Amino acid sequence: MRAVIQRVTQASCRVEKKITGQIDLGLVILLGIEDCDNLEEMKWLAQKIANMRIFGDENGLMNRSLKDVDGSVLLISQFTLFAQTKKGNRPGFIRAAKADKAIPLYESMLAELESLTGKKTEAGIFGADMKISLINDGPVTIIIDTKNKE
Image (cartoon, rainbow, N blue to C red; front, side, top):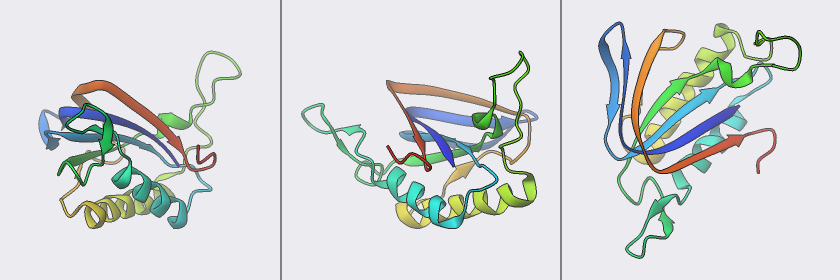
């Protein structure tokens, strides 16, 4: 599983001109799911995201977590995070999980983040052509891959 996490002051997702999810202060998470990913990795990643201290405290230091600032999450599925670009100019997506594997993990991530934060997790629509708008705060953008756990 691979996540691109962006700290935002506001963000929204539109599908066919309809807002499917929107947040103010919080995190936009672009989530890529690989065919070999599992629930254990999803839970590890959700815990990491909910507890990561990337929001400023009274001294401007990154000491507060999403839960500490009562922030929200906008979760967006993004199979292109597993693009293979080594050969040619057209990316390949063979490593990205197919819908039958990815959708249950994506829905589990939604539920897990809601459980950990105590707030509804806003979302896009899996597999849809989505338009994401956001104001990146900082900017703070962090990439986590469950295979590396760096």
